[in-house]
Length: 238
Image (cartoon, rainbow, N blue to C red; front, side):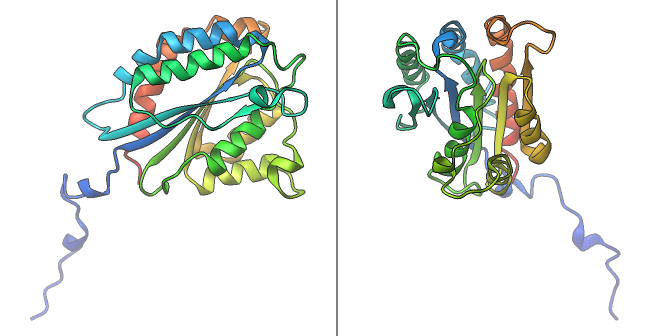
């Protein structure tokens, strides 16, 4: 006699899906290093320990981080406009050292007037910044900027298309979790709307405070604590 299992074959017992949980993550800190960003970057560096401490050891099996930096792709010197060459590390002090290198670049006064090339840098980080498949290691980009964004250069994209759409597609297709600490701007909002599942947008200066001052006044201890917890949870998603 054939017995109807009544859906029993589809029940998942808690714990049997553990092998699907990755618990591994790659993190790119994407820092605007134009002239006004020095105080914010210093505060990020001071609170990296808080971020690392909130990468939940019950969830995270393995993590790596690196720091990318950017200025104005059209007007800054090569060392300021984009640096995506810093190495992956699991050492908090090495992350701090990479941030200190960014502070030294801030002192050179890049950027001039806003806007800056945050979206070029984000696109290149999403497209080329990771050396493992998203199915193997969760991808996370954390942007800090006090500037509105420039239009993504055709030279960055490699094709003559709408940069916001292509960037949003890169984020979604590669399952890249993006946290943006940035001023209110239509382009940032569009990225949030287009790739909503993967984008967390923390607006800077929404109350009318100038973005430069607003970012300086962020409680970076709390922000990096929250980021550490968010990155931990996202690392479980297959």
